[in-house]
Image (tube, rainbow, N blue to C red; front, side, top):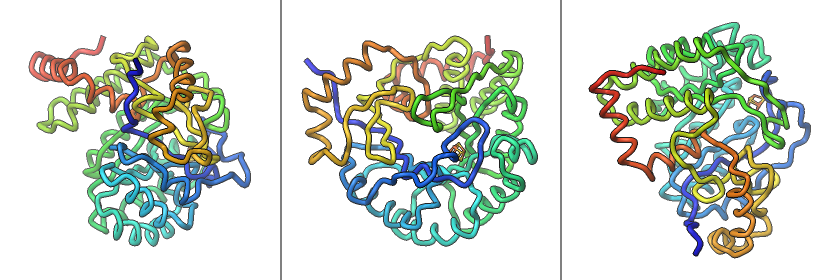
Length: 332
Ligand code: SF4
């Protein structure tokens, strides 16, 4: 019997056009990227609880307010977050006025991969850090509270990991992070050999996890759990909890191809060929392709796949939080 339910989390890459030149990603080298249309996005299922609106650079889409309105209508129960490099403060300022009118609770995640020059180097964009800070100032001025800094760990910037976390705390906004990895079709196909020194990872993660656990905020405790899982994943390649790419989660690329995740290089289907997403997702054909996900057993631990794992394992997560909050946390 199929164990497939409808998906609850996804990332949609609206376009691969991008105005940055990041060291860990070759998407910016793609010219004249295909783009998801409003019709494609209107087919997203209403089972989704989290939709990350991403790219490329999402704010290069002039129709972003219409896109958000379309996703909001298709997925009325989903938390929406736009991921951005933050390099276009005036464009973001203007677009967000329209976006907040249709989705007042939407979040924005701005990538920050280091303090000052480190960020500029990582993102191949002189003056980029200052532009990001300007963008955050603009968004805070609009009264937005659902804001976060998103850090990508590489060997080069790992020492700045705790510094950017502290910056997020100073700014009074959330902090998320990921690990630069290889993908045959995402990141422009860039193969990232990424082995940061273990002692720097221990230093950064200990600082962050201890601070998150010291708070009295459930969301921050869950982030501590996620961060601990990321440390374990980076250092051992084993996810701390089972997660289900291609079942709970999917990645939608600008051509409409639906992937189990950004590290599974085969498609489940194409949204342009799908009449009804739910029927497609539960179809024997999709289930057949999912067998490949099971057979490959590619280890995954990303915020988008881990989030559903956290929902699915409340006892294990709760136990970890209680133990590490009240009996001390030590990263081994
Ligand atoms: S990481 Fe993001 S901002 Fe950087 S080149 Fe890739 S898509 Fe653009």
